[in-house]
Length: 179
Image 1 (cartoon, rainbow, N blue to C red):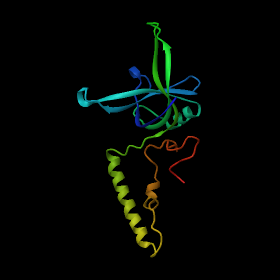
Image 2 (image 1 turned 90 degrees about the vertical axis):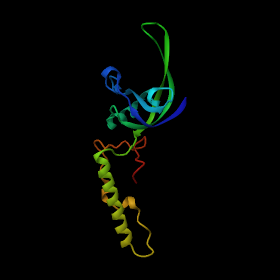
Image 3 (image 1 turned 135 degrees about the vertical axis):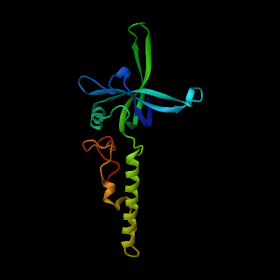
């Protein structure tokens, strides 16, 4: 199997109005598609969408349920490339397609847009001012303060957070972004 990394990909729409994520009846597996806009000079507008099927099982499926992924969610994932084979019921021909078997998944942080962007800029300016205040107050010869730790505003909940689960968590439960 090939190990695959997909970064900043979007959960694609379901076919003909169907749900984007399809969970099995017992809830132990999920199937969905991811996509990314890619440059292609051969098509009108020079861009097209590249989509691929994705499956997840067991604990990774549980993680996806906690993340409450939906159409339009941006994710990063680690997966194995595999091939599915089946017989078409109408033509009776054998068909196949590539599918990614997810091993780890997290939200892709793609920045803020619209109103949140201005709020984020103001928060960032506040952090820089607070960091400057802390550095000015530090005695001579003291180690500089990390600006990321200078403001409590930096610890506020992320807009992607859902029920306390941010998706920025290593497979197995350890959060890579916090001490």
